[in-house]
Image (cartoon, rainbow, N blue to C red):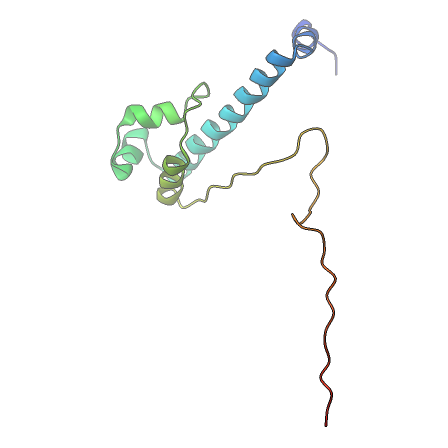
Length: 118
């Protein structure tokens, strides 16, 4: 695929650490907003319908679905998920290295004591 001027510009901008961090955070907020809107639409609800079920305002739902909004609270996301028959998962991943499955502790040395039969 041919690279556009925008591709080159974005590549240049991403060299700046501050910009790259803001760009990544914007993408994360965008993902959350798109997921909420998609789940709501699949449930056949308008923003107003969802707001009524959550006992909040349509403006709050609009804010949650806005890609620029970064004030999502975990409690509100859980309420939305419950009404839309979904679940919230938060994943922390180490930066720089691919995620691996690891337990937080080193494996212990387990020895089974065998009882003597009399």
